[in-house]
Image (tube, rainbow, N blue to C red; front, top):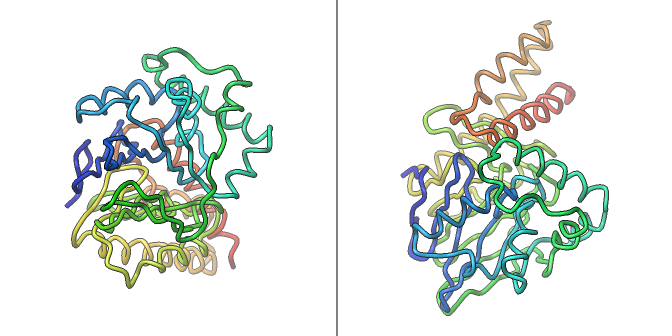
Amino acid sequence: MFLRASAEIFPRIHQISLGASCRYAIVADDGLLTLTDPGATSHIGALEQRLKRSGFSLSMVNKVLITHLDADRVAGIGLLRRLNPALQVFGSSAMHFALKDIEFVKEIWEQDAVISSWFPQDVGPGLLPFAEFRDALRIDKSLVESDTVTLGAEIALRTISTPGHRSHSLSYLVVPHEFLITDETFGYYNGRQLAAPGADDSLAASIESINKFKNLEISGIGFSYGGSITGALVRKHLDMILQNTQDLIDEVKKAKAAGVPDTEMRAQIREAFYAPMLRDPCLINSLDKSFEAVWRQSSTIY
């Protein structure tokens, strides 16, 4: 099954959709929420409304788990901390050290302002001053491969390193449901259209990360964009994204050998893989970045 709208995917696992962008809320035994990738500052107001429709509130969020450090995933953490100072943010040690770089944090802050300009009606209290933003955007607890975040007697999240979209990308497997929450390392799911690689950092690393799950029984995948899939679509997508990634590399190699102009190859790849399925500015921006990164890699491998 393919779910695009906000819904309870499995017991205690809720998909919260804002346009094409998705995050996932997991309910702990005490009723509090663990949230993945809260989004940009301009997402937080809409996130609160979606949570209310599902019977929750932002005040119930006490943990945030990060898949990667892009503004459309993490820039809203500052506003969340303002609302809930006890919030704990989980990520990797690589994320922790990356956020020690003031210039890197400033890039996220500046991109957050750009995203907010796309959604002026949703900015709410406005963007945070840089000093507050910098202090708030931090990892409180670093996770390593196979670390478990326990949310109760019968539900937990296991950390899995899945580089590809970013070198520090993490995924989280919610047990016992075996539901994988991941980022663009696993590509952009696009229904019956071609699944597009999202390996901005490394095509090879993305293939290796996806292959980790080829022989595992995964009941569902929650993507950063587009929604989530369950059942038979899971295996189909894993096979498809691996095949599409390899086909894209092979076709570029053949086209270069045949003397096909780069402009023609670029146009074909963009149209086949990276045409947006929804008119969401964040999705369009992410697709554009992935296209340029994947094109750069595939056109220089050989």
